[in-house]
Length: 279
Image 1 (cartoon, one colour):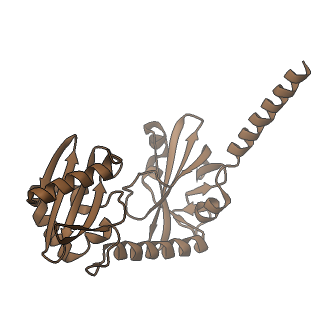
Image 2 (spheres, one colour; image 1 turned 30 degrees about the horizontal axis):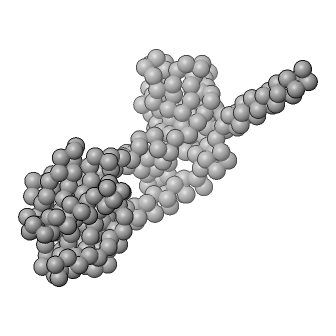
Image 3 (tube, helix red, strand yellow; image 1 turned 90 degrees about the vertical axis):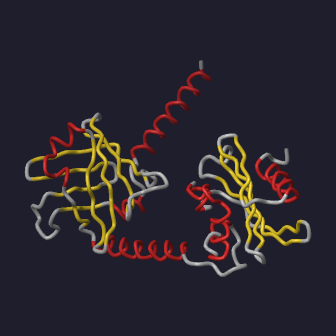
């Protein structure tokens, strides 16, 4: 019995600990960046507003109050294709059953919040459901502008041309204009396949391979989140401006670039090593 009491006590302690952890709500760093007061007019004390607190979000207009509890945060709310300047989604429930989502967006002035949720809640919110609530924390707004500018510079750098011979990964190689021209020419109709044309999926580093007295750059690429069924290998002869490749999509293989028989056999062997673990 004594042992049972000890186990029960430990279980109760764990459950209380889990509840306490859940009750902590937003992390301090998230609260510092996105918490506080948002309003239609930050200079007017009685302006309709949204108050983001550690564990809840409150929407206030005059005597009207909507409180969303169990507040959580989702930086990947839109997956890999978020809208421009999206920063974070704050998720909660009004009265424990009506879903409420507050999307925080950045612009040249700082950040603002827009609301979304189930139809019943949006109907009750009326015009507020379509409003933009500006963040009233100037320090957080300045940081949002800085982050936005940094992201824009990073995005531009990720698209900048790469000098020939300097690429380390396929995502850089496609920005070598000499390679890109030869590659798209070799792909032909396959150039309409986004993951293949952009070479933006998971990939190992480029390597060098000498085949039949010719020096090639070897690249392996695959479709994001579907590498097992959609993948490719290719050989780039920079001196002659030629690309040869082998692509698999949905269980079917196809060569491109019209490789000679020895190169085609080599591509098949490379593909097996890259995508079938040497099988």
